[in-house]
Amino acid sequence: MHQSANVQFERAVREFARWRAVPANHRSLAPAWWWGPAFEVIDVQQPMPADWCAPLELPDGSSFADGAKVFLDSLAGQTSLPWSHDFPGTHRHPNPD
Picture 1: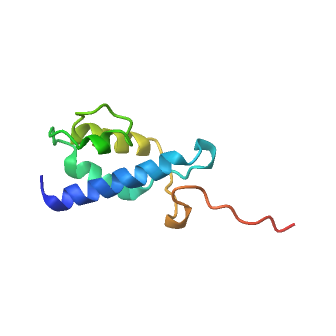
Picture 2: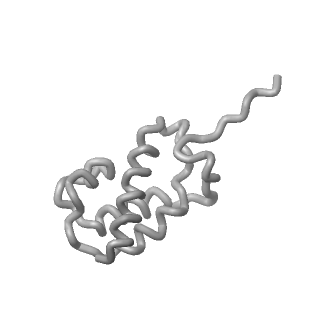
């Protein structure tokens, strides 16, 4: 696997952990920038490092392809995407009243 794909996927794993830490009712939609890293490794059957499996809620020994599926599943069905300032939680505007 190319080193740049590895670096981008690792970044996405860290972001996914931050995103999942936000309660679901306050979490932003999944960000579109996860598509690229996911598609880069979609066919890679090499096992991911164990410390990447846990944040993706996958068992140790899961492949990069398994991790890519987690990202793609989180994006499936979305009809809009968050703004970068809304990630990982939704941006709340102060009440004008």
